[in-house]
Length: 193
Image 1: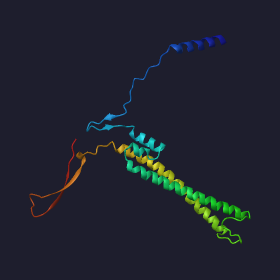
Image 2 (image 1 turned 45 degrees about the vertical axis):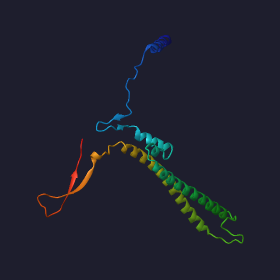
Image 3 (image 1 turned 30 degrees about the vertical axis):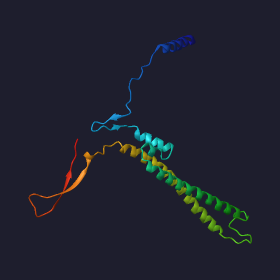
Image 4 (image 1 turned 90 degrees about the vertical axis):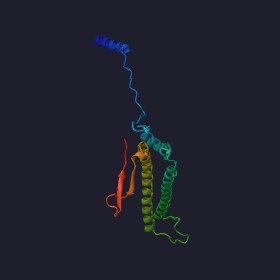
């Protein structure tokens, strides 16, 4: 029994050395020429822009050649990060003062003569407010980070649409040859294929 199983396994192993797999001959095009104009459509452009923005905030905007958006992204992320760090340090400050006061030690909000600048309930309220502000700051930082990724992807997608003069709407004033005494307003819509 063992010998028959060993021979069959050996047969399959030796046959596998002589079997060949088929090579993939399909080539995926990464860009297509559009028929209506000479612009090139790149289906991977939105994903590249999103990837660059995820790796480096503002990278997708640089990839899309919208350089004026990069300082806006950086300042929005920097501002929300600053508020997070500030609220977090203030929260830790009030938290340590609260813990010290609960343990009967002198904290930074108690003077040397024992006068309390901020009461115990004031320290609790300050902690609650600063914790909420800190959480809101981190939420806004994450939201801005995600929005700049989405913006870069959507902008890369929309940059590939044809926005030539053939797709314009021009309102024009014209005189009606039948009714000369009344001014008319008309709308001319011009499109070509």
